[in-house]
Image (cartoon, rainbow, N blue to C red; front, side):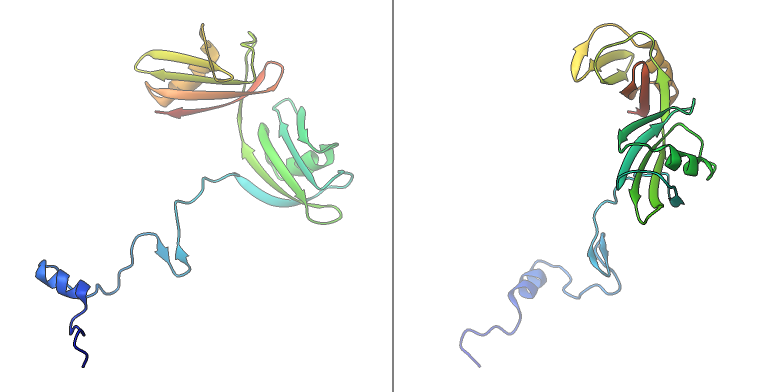
Length: 185
């Protein structure tokens, strides 16, 4: 045996001297460990429903669009998406929704849909993004990130069901039509 060889590993010796148990725990794993390794916080769900549909006559390999309650389609990426929207309607999905599709074959598309809320703001606040924060009765309105004066009764009404403190975000879709979401604080 060597002159400097320890009989007990240093970490065990220090734990013993500190009054800690040195026996390993059995049958437990640290939080976040799975068979394949460490898993973090799961991502928020991006789509409410994902499915495959057949649609002929749609150009390109990717599409993104919004379907409004009056059957208007606002195309953000792609061209003629009406055949795809008609195929989606046959699944029983009612607008308004946001859709993103990717071609998987000659006529087959994989499509993800997320239901959205849409409101009309007849008084144009300007900008393309609005954020209304209500906290303890105090209201702050941002238009494209800059403070704005005035009020947006439609946004306040939309968020009021979330409690006394909430945030409403709105994004212009087209003209006076806005996609909105509200969250309690």
